[in-house]
Image (cartoon, rainbow, N blue to C red):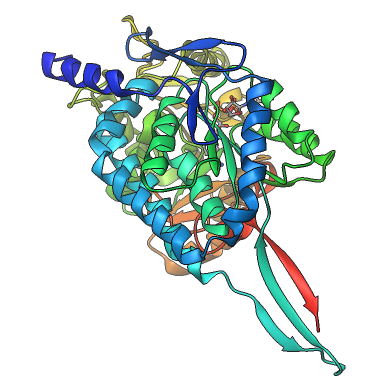
Length: 488
Ligand code: NAD
């Protein structure tokens, strides 16, 4: 790290919030507990933050409940202006937020900058959606009455977010909830709590009334979710994270019949047909696999390539992957940062070891880097037996697996042979095939000749065990609205 980078990081750390944000105040946790946040590029602790417990959860819910009626009555135009101001502030403070994300999560600084733009976009998009919440007025078909349908905010919401996109996974929930007129309690991931703690300050500066948004970093996630989902004042839970935790939260939500939105795991197939442009497909593969170090729910998990072009594709991919510059997230020339923590590093290496033990071939990588921090060499595997865990579990790391297929129906069957259904990618120059395959894939999102698909204006979400509901697009705000029918 250069001295200039160290100085800039120290300056960011000096200004960071370290306490819970509840009811418009920054406060210590009621029981005084704190926890350390680490830099994955070195493994070193760089700050200690408050650790919310059950009393803090109830205080945040008191604030959310007290402010809910007033926020719901706030004119949509005013809610939109606050979101729009928050968008401007995120962009203004983008350099600081990007450095912070590289520091707490490890992603390459270029990707952090891209996340600032992407994450902020949800605030802008939903500022534009807030004044466009629609109802309808019709005559009852049988006559003698009128049907008035309106939308109302669902009520106080709990949002739980993962560590892989520390800003965007928050704004994707906060933007639509605030636009809809809901108050919200956010629990950021324990590895990366700081970005959303800073965002709480940004919203205060943007004029959000105190109590509408609380941010509770904690190491006690199960206690937090049990405390809040057991309280009838909470009306909704929105979660992004693993399918295993999502299932637990759906079960917990049943007690109070809470609304749930679930953005869960993925096992994205990336299909390359023999009529595709191989260079384009390799570019797309790099984006779909190595973006965010592979730590993305939309990351391509399985490259399925037509047998006739498989060797050409695999060789080009291995060459590009092995040339990636691995380093600390905040160093300017880094293309691939560390994994977020030792647990993820061990998990990814375990998947590679399992595949190799069953007979897979490692074309490049396949090992941890011997240096401080949680670095894994970018990896390409081929000749992978069908029962290798790496083909069935979400990899969430810089490991590409390539297998061949014979014809289109085999490719579709292989792509769909998973309990997940989030993203899928198709490379082909045949428009009929592109549409036919996209329609046949069990996925909430399909990229055609594109390795990156996320867009605040598009509905993001999965089918099967990848989740319930959509974020972004015109669909995103619906998750935070209830329909009321008034008979006249
Ligand atoms: P995770 O499920 O371990 O944790 C996600 C969040 O849930 C964290 O904030 C964690 O503290 C919290 N949590 C864990 N146990 C909990 C409990 N019992 N009660 C309440 N909260 C609890 O997932 P992760 O490792 O942080 O994130 C990676 C996962 O997220 C991957 O599976 C990835 O696919 C998924 N993800 C999905 C999307 C999507 O939009 N579909 C986006 C990003 C990440």
